[in-house]
Image (tube, rainbow, N blue to C red; front, side, top):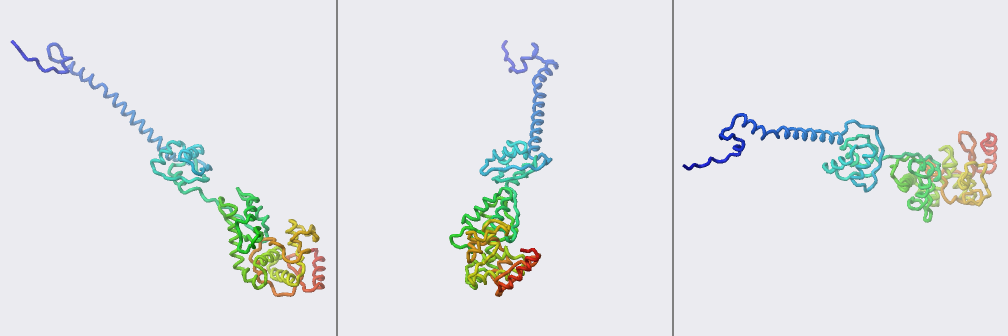
Length: 367
């Protein structure tokens, strides 16, 4: 008698000889086939936890949420993103340079500008990127130049500003790279050609930029004062009018005396007389005490010995002195002397009149 075998079933390997399974056998097989499920669930839970922690950590790097004290740092020109991230990390502005680099790339942040910055510690990445996109804040420096200052005094004042030097400013003001429209050919010294005023300049402005600003301001004001027209009327050059204005600036104490003092200077020039002005020799000798004046010196600013105007202005003239030099009073005066402690001068046409004024000044201890 022949028969056909029943199809083979995988579970038959575990079946009892009779070919029938008990319920306990079936449970054991199913249990063995599914015992990996808890391990898989555990692994997935771990992955989710790690991912969650990582996301939280990254978010903490991107925005710590608590800003610290401001800290100063500098981004050099042509710095790479990696260098910038490293600088920020060392300064404590950000915590993790690597995450910052990836964040910049992911955001397509673009170029970050070099310069000097000051940002809080623990800053958010977005605020840092925004600040570096705008560039460093512009820092301004402010200084005031009084009327009557010399070029050396201006250089000393500018040289006191952070990051600047008197020598650097003086080089810019005498090197010939910046010129006034009133400056004669062959003359590089800008003495008398910088306008006395209050200036606000950028901290990164060069000395040449500052000098140019002061010269431009002077040229504008001198033009407004009518220096060109006055030169034609007086028969001298515009530069010489400015030289006269500088002497008026140093000699006059009161505005009401400026035009009469200018008239004395012009009257003496027309009479081919020595000007005999202390201020010019004080400037030439580099002193401030009239008791130290050497009236016999060969100094080109010695108007007690050499006729005519000194070779350059001796100070920075303001508008009142420029106006007086351009529009001198019409007088016959050829002398003046300080006669009052308030700064008032007395004027004279003759030597006898001057002698009386001089005696009055001496009696008051003014000379």
